[in-house]
Amino acid sequence: MAIGIAIIVVYALMVGILVFRYDHPNPRRGKISGRGGDFSE
Image (cartoon, rainbow, N blue to C red; front, side, top):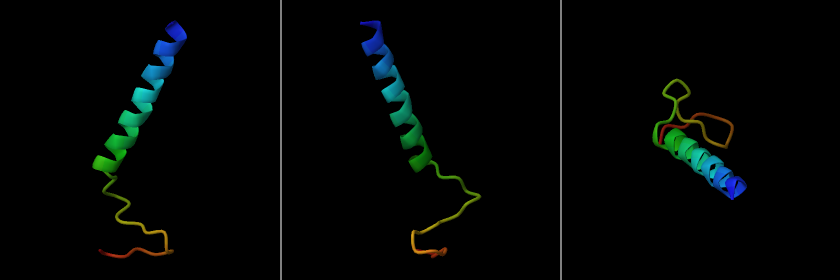
């Protein structure tokens, strides 16, 4: 039972970190596209 709770906690933390990074992107990097350059869109 403890293993299942640990897996849920780790999953929730990973999802929370991903959501936080996408909601608050790093302002120093700017916009980076996958086409090899910075495009202002």
